[in-house]
Image 1 (cartoon, helix red, strand yellow):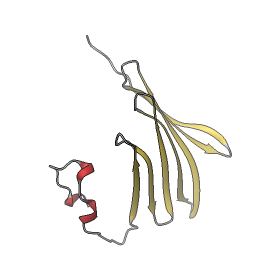
Image 2 (cartoon, rainbow, N blue to C red; image 1 turned 30 degrees about the horizontal axis):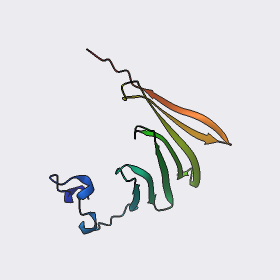
Image 3 (cartoon, rainbow, N blue to C red; image 1 turned 180 degrees about the horizontal axis):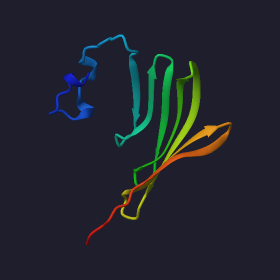
Length: 124
């Protein structure tokens, strides 16, 4: 699909409905996005056969991505498995991302999967 993008046109102005639909032997992925009044993604849903991803996105008072909740449904050892996940974005005093934490739920318990910390050096 990327061959049909016009790089001189912003991504939100591309005429996706006019792109030809290409089918291959692979599973076709379909995605749906919802946007806020300020053109921020507030929800995302993707399917690929029986596999699914669904996310809702919350922004903080400064309109920065703060919290993402989602559910994945994917094949594991030949069985479809649902997994609830969360991402938390934290920012420093200058408004830059300081860390991203990802969690998943197992047996009703919230577990930290990974934390990415950004070290930013400011020069004055």
